[in-house]
Image (cartoon, rainbow, N blue to C red; front, side, top):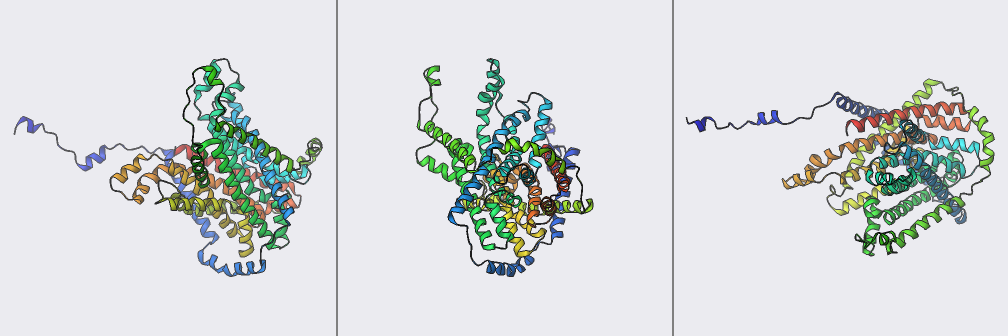
Length: 574
């Protein structure tokens, strides 16, 4: 044997290669998080089994549905003038409340962002305000403001505004923390004030995210305004509640149809505004966004090429291009719409001077909390029922959304027809307020948790499906192309590249939906959907505000625990 042959390297076997392959070390925290996910999934399955929601049971209710719609006869509507007035009032109070939240969220987000806050104490306080306002049910806030102010739109405006601060400020603060620090630091180095740093170095970078969040929140507030009618807030929700309580189902369903159409129209308007103000890149991926972006391009409104200026003076004096004129008109039109929303809300401004005298007595009526004649055990069980409803609904939504949301993603759908159809289906589902669906199901199937669970599950598909589709479209395309080049099918590409890369976002979105469902399940209980909401409505209508305080504290603790769990999960699987 020659020396060369003796020194020839021996090819490693497959087992050796597998042994040498780098392996990601599983930390104990990651293992605990995975076990927690399995436990939560098991609880969701157990809740679904306990609720006994089955296809045969749903089909057996079809006869009840036929009898119900037979009693309804045909849809009826208020007089045209009254319907127009109610519609304008509803849109006005929702828009005014959303704008109020948008304005108040700016300083809170500034203090909550780690790179702009003056100190840790300010940041903790701002974050707490955001969590508190996000956890407080808007219907409870409306109850309180109905006591403080005159009946009308103002309690709804304040309830929507304060409740929306939490979500808008959270998204805004997250966007601020992701900015390019260069412009802000340059303004500081040039001697600029803190206000100048924010207005010129921070705000221009986060404005697209802020506008998109505010418009999205406005759509949510419009759907949520329905339940405020059950505690006396004026508008379409109040008229619908009166119709259903008086068993005038034809009128109630007619108003529900108007609310659904209004939600779809608001979605279309929001999409057009996002395209006009933010451009196609920052406007999102909704089906209406794509339609408006395509129309904008075909109309010659594509993004302008980069301009080069001869001097600094020429750069300061921007030319009046068509894009600048359109943006200016859109800005003034937005201001006019906001002013119109305030005007049609018919706010009694003198209430802001007189309500202060009512505050001590109202605050005393809510304290100390007690559990009334029900007792802690009864209310604790009702809170558990609410959590079970939310878990079961989240599981059903997850399964349906994973299918519809995947087909709505450009890189997963087999063709544009399937993708556009899935996106349109998600828009239609988002336009149906859960409380309207719950009312119809309760009338058909009777009071109980089943109707609330199905309503929550169906309503959540529109939100979670859209989030899943957007997340899948944002994954790196390299692994997908590699699998396709190796001869993999689209299903294998999805299972091997798209789904694994989007799984982290999927976990975060699912926990966000669970958080939303717990609050929504509470509200659905108000109309008979089971859970703690039933006791909350009875306590409010019976002026037992100490019991209201106890229920609110239970809801707050539950929401905070879920939010803390979601934050931990997102950090572990980041």
